[in-house]
Image (cartoon, rainbow, N blue to C red):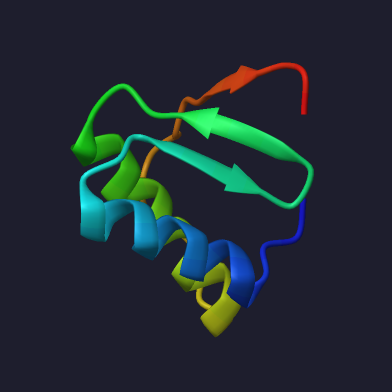
Length: 66
């Protein structure tokens, strides 16, 4: 999945209000902790900025129906 600026905006909005569930393009993701959410945000930002990721894997849980 290629991340977009709107995905980064969505995750930043979730962080701002303390939510752990974020809707991206065609699916919704619920993160287990704010730490996971922040790591995902950093990964998305790095990809948009064209940087390579030096961190470990990020695990997410997808909620169906969207």
